[in-house]
Length: 129
Length: 311
Image (cartoon, rainbow over all chains, first blue to last red; front, side, top):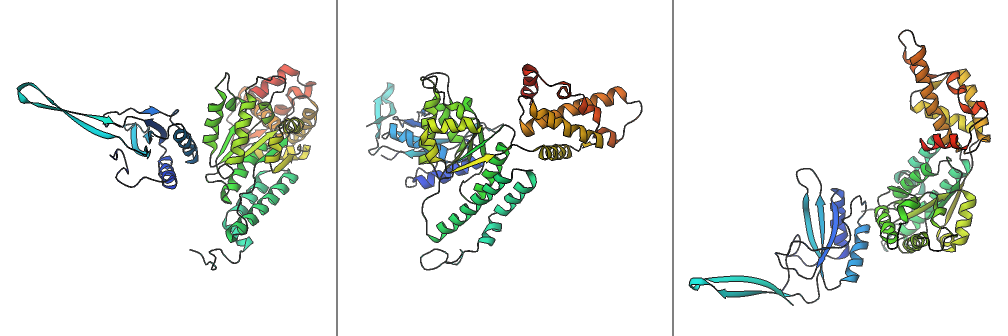
């Protein structure tokens, strides 16, 4: 099942030229870029693994693309996303986040029903490869 | 869209128009006006600019495909304007479209080489990422290589640099700077660099007259002036200072002027009896310069270290 999280996830996957253009946009706004990856794309899994430190003071998207290439090489079957962090006072949070790498075969999100007291039903979801 | 022939390339090119339109003319004029002396350097830069302009026109016409190698080495004594020229060079390359952003990242060995195993590669890469799209200026580049210590981490930084200089020629330009003799040794020990650096530019020392001109323009920028006797004293100062150790061309002059301003302020403060006018506040007089230690037989080594550390 196609995982849809962050910006552009209902669009076809971005190619490298498009990713570069998006990063240029972020750098223009002086946002810091971070590369993160995970093998657990559950929507509740907010914190993905960081690939290196977030990159402050970059001027050109090429620096991010180099990191992204290395992350892809090391984790070709992981979900990789790019986060753009705005440090402006009063915002201080991620302003843009988009997926840039997916495994060839995406996992399913499986729903589990459980009976509960008084015939109530409880629902849970987990990611299954 | 501009007019194009059937192949999608422009059929003719007007170099003079291209020269002005790209803003190269502006940079060259700035170079001529802002820098005193340095005739051979200006000549080399003019040649390089012409080459790059023609090369760009050729690529627009589809006659050439590759990005030319643009990495450079600047050799010369301290204070001869290497960093200033590097900054102009980055502007020039940006205007010609050889680097995308045109910023200058200045680093030395400390910014590239780590202190323990596994520290160097991330540190070097961090710097390279920041320099992407611009110019990386490595000052005192020969310090990267320390032949007497085979476990020195500098070698690791050199290997990463070489790799990026080769693979990311479109993304950044590396300029290495340092003293001529030490850079020669550095290049002969690391032949990889020599073959990847296309432009070697040598910065000559300034003559006494040029240094005096530089001093005057420095003061001009700060709205100061010399009276006649002070100008004569400064000319003598330059001749004497050159013979003493740790002479760093324009940088020594800048430090000398900073100290002269200090003495001027002190003199005004202790001598002034009435109100001072603008001319008095902005004129440096003979005693301000004559009080320098240079006139008293010079500096010994640790005294000389102080003005350098203070810059």
